[in-house]
Length: 91
Image 1 (cartoon, one colour):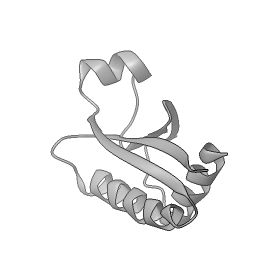
Image 2 (cartoon, one colour):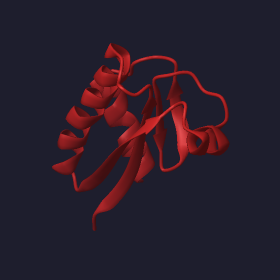
Image 3 (cartoon, one colour):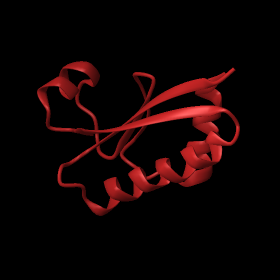
Image 4 (cartoon, helix red, strand yellow):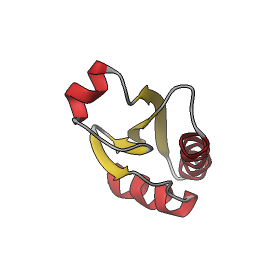
């Protein structure tokens, strides 16, 4: 049975280098998890959006939310850390 994780990469648009790196690290981690039966849906959100602010409150970019919960804020996670978070969330 497949598990699904919904990931939101929250940052500035157009993306700064840190936000872009976060996005790429999530993409790389999602490819690894795909072979383990975990489907990862990735969406980019603008940190200045009223919808993002009302949903998550004031946050620092880049931020990473998994299934609606902010897990990382204000720093770039490496690929291994993202893989670990995705596995934990998919349980």
